[in-house]
Length: 216
Figure (cartoon, rainbow, N blue to C red):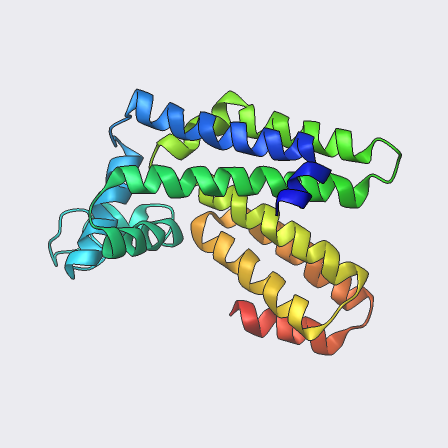
């Protein structure tokens, strides 16, 4: 690990500083859940208490079903079930996800850019992502964006590996990650259709069926 950090000093420094910045932002501003964030928090806590997918911890159906999800709500519920109803734990986990997303941006640029300065440009791209103020703010709030972007970027990296060398393992993994992202926010369905179209175009019928059935 130490040797790896020394070899990639720039991206290592960016990721470490970015994680510190994300976590510091969350603890310094201590943003209280409101509007959508408050609803996600209520639904997650209701799930943990066993009163169902509601905003009111009541078995009576309410507006919870109209919220984006249910992926993010179950993500929060899993955290609350393990650690208790502690929002600061969510900040820490989301800061890790934000940092991991920046690393995925780095990997994507390295994969797509083959020139001599690929390492530098990839690190700068990751730096732009991790310190961009809107993205830096999301981990400090109970909103879907941080988890969603992590899943989408993970799916893109897996999809590129699948496009380069299709195998049952990476087809299943790509489908699982993209489907998880759909459960958080639906627009990633477009990327799933692109991947499926590629498999059909290459006449990889078995992989196309595996991709569909895994998603279902």
